[in-house]
Length: 125
Image (cartoon, rainbow, N blue to C red; front, side, top):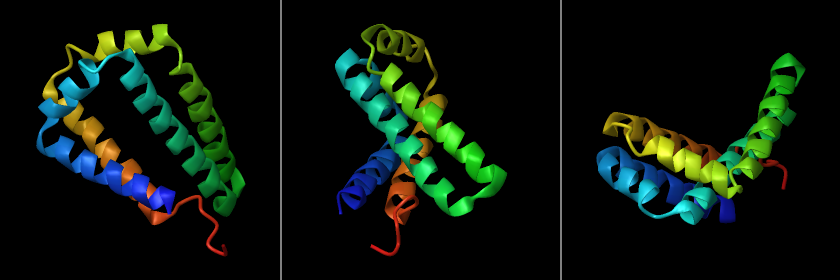
């Protein structure tokens, strides 16, 4: 249930940001380090957990690669919790043109759709 709600929030926010990427730029660069830190942490954590959950069903070399990438994403999520690293990301994002933020908004929609589709959830529950 919670995954569905979060998936809808990410999908709607991503659609709004695709429509108006300047909102995303101001939202991520002017909110401050703590806000960006939470967003980056949750994004990397959701991607990592989804990949590990999907790898359970895949198996083989592809499944192993998905588990490795998922673990790397989770480790990266915990790196995002460091203030210096997040400040560096904000300084890096500030001069980016709007088309890059539009691509990031498409990633938001993709993560939302992954959460809504239930990848990584056990279907038997």
